[in-house]
Image 1 (tube, rainbow, N blue to C red):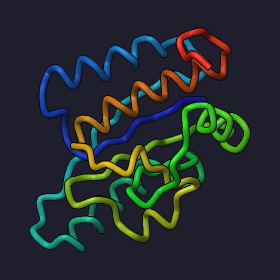
Image 2 (cartoon, one colour):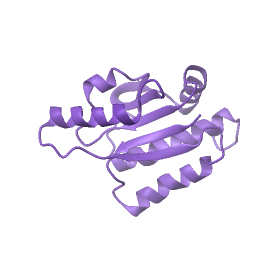
Image 3 (tube, rainbow, N blue to C red):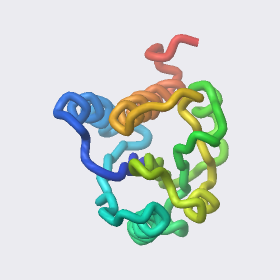
Image 4 (cartoon, rainbow, N blue to C red):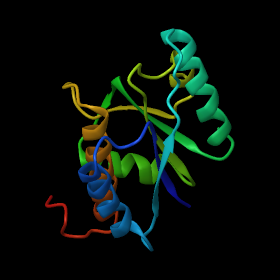
Length: 153
């Protein structure tokens, strides 16, 4: 079983890539190793077509038959870390892909295929910040699952 953090586009700076990699390294050999997959952003000018093109790429790379889908979205459910840990442990056996959309967001049809729509916050973050926050939270979630003191309850 593995977890994948799928993001459209590349990290905006070496600092962001290093921060995310820090958590990826910490999770190697853990319960759910974390892999980061950078998907190619669409270059189409039309928002609807661009999102549809990205959705098709995501569907091909992460078929619903092989992955549970947690899609980050502003209208998603807000959870604290312990609740997210419990939810993933209890409802999401197997491989999970966590998707951070592109600058245009995420195709509405793709959102409907989500096993969970998750919001990081009512605030708006850059894609780079969302990448770091999500990587850290996935590390923290696994520490909660293992009753590790990293997360102070």
